[in-house]
Length: 206
Image (cartoon, rainbow, N blue to C red):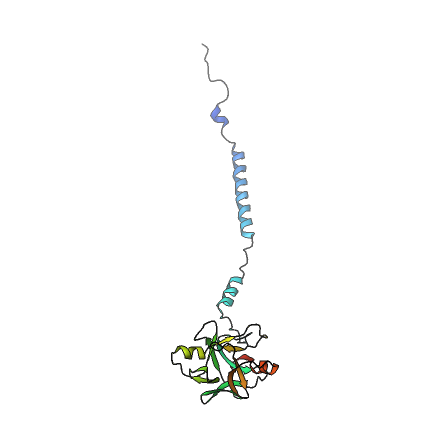
């Protein structure tokens, strides 16, 4: 009797790896993992820069306030008012009148009482420079329209840098003007001396 068996190779046996090949695959995997770990450990860490810390330290320091400087012309603030040709004299108060003094005095320049595009001068006692019978004096505000106009002076344009001239708002042909050590509002005489006597500068208070 003829006996027929399975012919050919068993497929399941063909799919099995040879033990030697399997050992080589495992060894290669171990080597690859070890190499990657070595490279990671050898990579230098990024240096930490102190830029942020130093920047924070700089920004937290308060900025120094600029020193006050003489303005280009008439402007608000507390100043010493001097003739442009006599920086050692100062507009001050003597009794009730305005005068030029050798003693430094501070005046506060504010927006004009009658027109905020012009200016008003106030002394340390809160009295205002105003004209009365053309002479300049310091008086307490009486809340009248006449007082506000008497105490308001408008600056001339196109003055030399650092200087100013002012005219009365209610007598626009009259300028604040020195007569010796006294001050008045006067009409220009047409000479250079009048321009010099009616030109003033502002300087920071000591």
